Image (cartoon, rainbow, N blue to C red; front, side, top):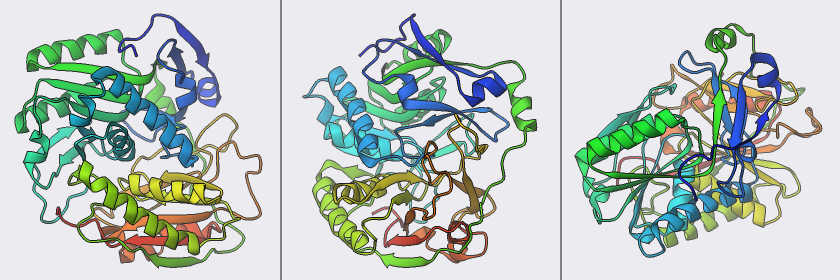
Length: 432
């Protein structure tokens, strides 16, 4: 797989964002069987730093997506890393996923590589956990990434092996470079790989990567399922900021119900990679997920469409639960809540057709949270008589009064008519 963009670009994507605001998305040929247009569609942010949003069709963040499609794209990205490193070196690697969007993707890639260690950055301040490093994401709505391994030695395992950084989208490459500079101060090594679903860097951005790598004295390789470019018209930020979006929090004809389900989870088994997830954790994790999935399955109508929703950075475990439901024959899609304020428009050709905002259940309740769609954006019936059941997966720190209060997540979902199965994990606390 090439790590530089081919000069030949394929078709330029149209759609509502292009027609209304003049933003264009072009893919470049020759990267993989995936194209940019398979992987992302144009959306709009509610953000003073950046107006456009590349909405992934395979990540399960903003769009409810079949779990098998999420896993297939992630596995292909993992295979791209293996092709670069070789089958002997890949399992020796450490993988770092970027919060919040790529925590699940990074875990999938680590699983595909059989990587020695997986860790993801976090924006959650965890009582009792030491911060061993930070880096900034300049265009984000929440800029600071924290590194909270249970021990800094987790980042120093096999320093002669590469560290693989995983993000859903590389726009300029600057966040990855900041992360590498921070990691070099914690546990220096000579080889990094940046893996992403799409790589949108320009030639100037690629030159900056080469300059930074030389300055740091490291090798940085990039792999992606597809390369592309976004072209933005002058004045886009002002135009998007001034535009009127559709209202959030639709109200249904009846209020849905909430059923609480306390999931079994064994002590000592990590629920994800916030504090580190070793390859040896995989088998007990898979066993625990299977037991938890049986509990969820028993609480559902297997004929009714279901959307499994993870809470922000809690992405991988809900994906695994959704995979179990899908294999059991339940019509299942998967996505997560987000900190990202995006514009909602119920128009054909736009990916964010429906949206909810709610009080954050933990950490910083003054900053609103969001979840989008819960119906497929291209669903033929935009107002089905029976809405999908939402399986809302949270961990202990998010199990708060704010979750259940007026304006909280359960309130806005049930007001729209969704029945909610609240699946609560007894995990998520301090580093083990």
